[in-house]
Length: 289
Image 1 (spheres, one colour):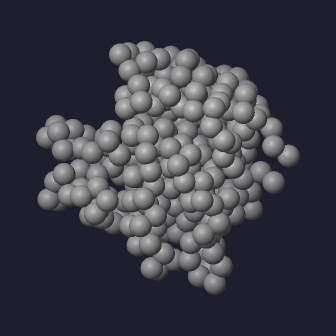
Image 2 (cartoon, rainbow, N blue to C red):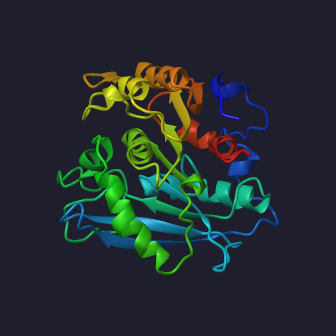
Image 3 (cartoon, one colour):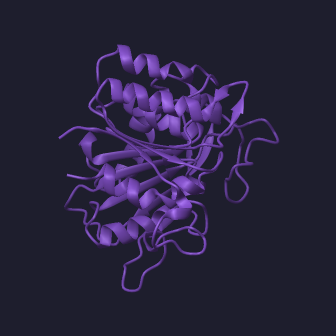
C-alpha cells in the first residue's frame, strides 16, 4: 500500500537514546559482524578533470552468488565516519545482522575536485580553500549528469568486483544539504536506477533552481519513488531561500501527488546529526514491505 505521512519528532523525547543522542542501532553491538570498508579514488570523464575519493562498504553477509542491494551516499566522508554524525556503516551492520534490511553494499562518494591529487582524507574543506570543489555543480544542478556519472562510471567500477542488484527498487540514494537534493534529483531523473531516496536537510532552494521541485512534483507525471525527508526548524534562511519552508513545500507537493513519502521534522539547524540519529528509522521505513 502506498501512503503519505507527516511526522513531528522531538529528538530530546525519543526513547532509548544514549548520552550523545544515538540509539543502540548506531552503536557497536556485541556479536554483530563488522563489514569491510575500503577507500578508493576515481577520476571522472562525465565531470571532466575531477578527482574524488569514495568508500566501499561490504557487509560480512555478502555472497557473490547473490545480487546485493545498494545504497549510495553523497558527501561520503561524513556518513562513513564511525565517530561522526551518521555512523552509517554501524547502522548497516546492525540492521543487516537482524534482517531488518537486506544485505546492502554501500558506496560513500565525495564530490569531485579539480586537483591533481588529494592529500590525506577528503572532507568538507577539500577544494574549498583553493576553489576547486565541483560540489555545487554536481549536487545542486537539476539534470541527469550526476546520475550518468553513477551509471556509466562509479557503479560499473564497483560491479567489476561485486554483484550489485540492477533492480531500482532495491537501490537507495542518500545525502544531506546539497547532497540531499542531489539524491532526489538522481531518482527523479532516473527512476530506472534508484527509487528510494533519503534526504537530510535537503537544499530544495534556489542555489541552482532547486526551489522549482514542489511545482514540478505537482505538475509532472508521478514517478515510482519512495522518499524520506528530514529537516530541522532552525535550518538555514539566506539568499537562496528558507530550507525549513522548502522542505515543507516538498512534503506538501509529495502529499498532493500521493507519493509514498515521510517527512520528519526535528528541532535543529543545518547539520547531519539529527538525520544521522534517525538513520536506523529511515532505513527501516524505506525498506518496509
